[in-house]
Length: 273
Image (cartoon, rainbow, N blue to C red; front, side, top):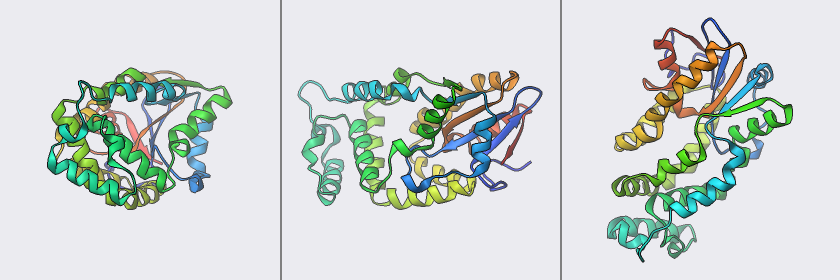
């Protein structure tokens, strides 16, 4: 059977089943451009046949999540990002901000991880990418309109905690990684969106390996650890009698630690569509 990293299908979606329901695993790109739609018919057909649609988090709660993130991502006791980051990272960060026409001072009271998320978000916005056009939002809105049941694999508090609970070293590494990748972020995302459309899982797996090669702790916390925690819920869907679609970030589906391979190892039939 083909590995998840092989492009043996036409879209970034897998059909999983054993004895119970059919569960389609759709790898999401969380931010896209408005002209990314309509999606391939096979994806829309999988949504139409699904009684339940599952997401990483309840997207209706994202406003409260943003407020929680802002509070959790603020430095305390008069600290500044310049002090916390140190001269080398702060210098690189400031240069990127100046080149982008954004004053680095607006980030001074953010923890490194919050500065990294804000920086990435601003860069995406400048390039025309929006979470509002992301795959998650698209299908969450459609499921709501169609009256389908929506489920979440994680709570907002858990997702905030993914970053709020980073150690100072991990938080700084996340900023360093974001600053280093800033110049290539949009070209890589442009290519990712194109590869996603044709189901090139191998590209996504290789990109994931490159991005996390020097940050194994972040990979465990943001990708592989979460994959393992989601497995009971996904297996519960597969054992049920209602077809479902699970929409999670594309990186969670590929690789040896990905959901596709973990399901195959447990004896499920999982085929790319």
